[in-house]
Structure formats: structure tokens, C-alpha cells
Length: 178
Image (cartoon, rainbow, N blue to C red; front, side, top):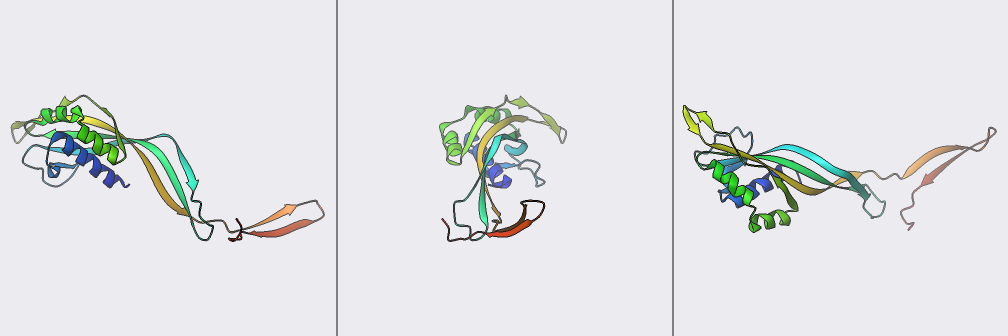
């Protein structure tokens, strides 16, 4: 899953939990014009790995490149900011964690670990106060990444048996061996 795909899933979760139309839950730091009504922005602000990744190779024959499967658990922290009248109420709605939202996260392989307290960050915009509020979501995911790597088919080496004589040999992988 790409970072963009992951962020889209989180934006959809925010829309589900708050009841906002998904078009009103936009990427954070987006340079497009802001909606003129109550909306939210979602920005990935922190990502960390939990534990050590497990690495394994596919169990197929050694006929071409090998698939390396890398699996790990990661924690992603998102800043969710709401703008316009009702912003603080939207933060409170997001903290409720409805069964529908939890089912959505589980279906997508995500786990909501924590939500921070909601904070008001009202600001002056065009000489008028604009209500703003923010909270952070901590979401866990177990990622599996597949990478292709070349199989080792031939290795040349020299083995020194004694000071008098060197033995040189070639080892080849026979694809018919089991």
C-alpha cells in the first residue's frame, strides 16, 4: 500500500466517523482552494516501525528472480484539522469511534490505537474569527511489501587446501533438484 493509498483510507475513515461528505475531507497541505463550508484536512505527521520486519522468500523454484516478502508493523500519526463553524464538534464526533468506523478500519487492515484530546485553534481569517480544531489519530498497520531480487545461480570460489595446491571449482544450481 502506498502512502497516498493509506492517507485516502484515513480520510475516508474521518468522513465516516464525522458524517462529512468525503469531498470535504481533503489532504493536509493541499494547495487547492479550501471548501467554503465545514471541512477537514488530514496530514500524515509521523511514522515509525514497531519491532523488526520479518523477511522471507517465496517458496517457488529458482528459475528466475525471487520474491522477497517483507512484513512489518508500523504506527502512523495523523493530524486531523477541522475548519469553519462546528469544527470543535467535529473533533468530538471523531473521538466517539462508532462501530461502523471500527469495522471499516478492520476491513482495511488498520487499527485505531489512540486519539488525542481535541484542541481549539481559532484564527482570524479576512478580519473575522474562524473556528478551527485539531486532534491526532494514531493508526497501526501491518504492511507486507514484495520486492524482486535476483537468485544466486552460480558462485566461483577458491579453496586453499594447503600451501602447495589450490582447488578451483564451480557450483551451479540445478533447477531439477528438490
